[in-house]
Image (cartoon, rainbow, N blue to C red; front, side, top):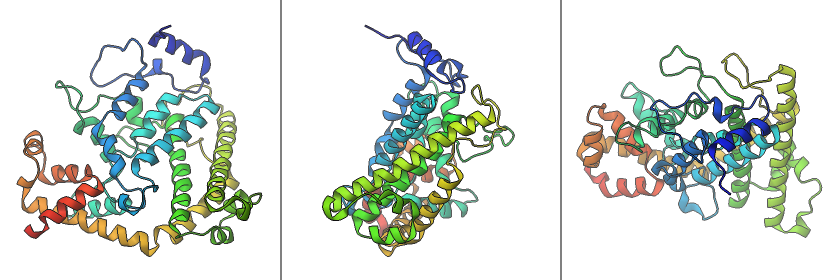
Length: 375
């Protein structure tokens, strides 16, 4: 049996909540395309992201630890997959559009530089010296609208307007500076799922690395204390205890988010997809859980992200980013000729920024080590 796109659209009508954004309600794409007989709009968007070069490179980009620190620490790719998984699970519970949540989640970190947030800070610093700036969400949007190509007739991946809008989850205005961004319930969900995912895996990576300990977390973080109250670490062993404890943490967050979001949607009287920018976020934790999440975030910020092991790698990464920027500025011809020719009408510092931001940690470090004598 073949299931057509039309049948999928009909299934959405009957299975999704009234406030979910249906594929049939999409405003379409900037460049008109022939409809796919077996896939809806957001499914096609997802496939274009998954098959993009920028998505593949996420496997070599740092989340917190650089890739060489260990085999089991998260990369940007695994983080994006975890955000997608959380988003889809909660979307199914709330009756939201899973396909739209999935594509926004998979695309949301495409614009990250090598070396995590430290790399982003270094890139922003170099761009400010050129009277510009760098922000990874804006870079993600630039990747799918300009840098990736799927057709000789237009730049970018030609994603649907809803996906592009969902990727601007931290912005209030469009590029024209006049039009407000509409934050769909699906994009709101991905934003909160992002926080759930990184709290979850940063706890795991922190414990696995030995920087964090369960006893120390228990003394400072209420949600951890709640998560381990029925677990016996002596009987379970270190690995299984850590796994179960962290699963409990993410379970507490996800259950609270789903229940709180459902309550907020009902109280706000939302009976159709959000088409106005006037709505405040309703896909959020309850008040008590939000305090626990804030407490966890503060603890990780002080104890994990600022630990000397993490900051040492961060400093090394920042040095590489800044060194590469100076290197390409001094000798622009080190960039591939294909890149220089394709973007010859762009400002030089924009082309340099795009090229460095697309690198993996390993490629950036290796390239700089091989050419830094030029500086």
